[in-house]
Length: 147
Image 1 (cartoon, rainbow, N blue to C red):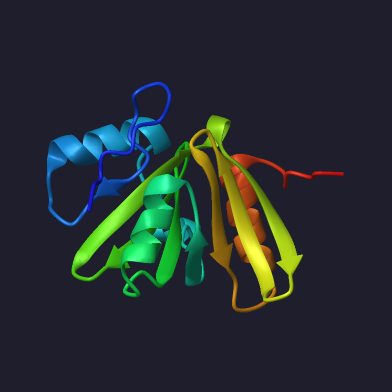
Image 2 (spheres, rainbow, N blue to C red):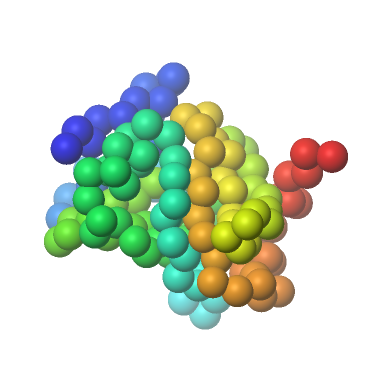
């Protein structure tokens, strides 16, 4: 599995975050900022990773082990985490380069994260709580509307 998806300006979209490599984390934090303290309620409910840009799509197609994703709020955006087999991957999302929206389709509610590399679709198991909506607004601003 290739993990070197490169965005137009040379920043990786998908990072293998399994190992405690300080240089790797510095690069991820350079995109999204460092995580907020736990008392700031900076985590999301569990979501299903449904689709995304080429690298995420191929990972989803290659294995049924990609199922759940969580979002962590950071100083300048957030990091979307998910597990594939025994590896943990992350997609750092910069606040100035990410938009979001909640959409309804035939299968239920979805969170769409629009980034330079493309859109990431995440399935929600229930209506988003006010706390989760506040987390998204704090990370990326108001919900993106296509109307």
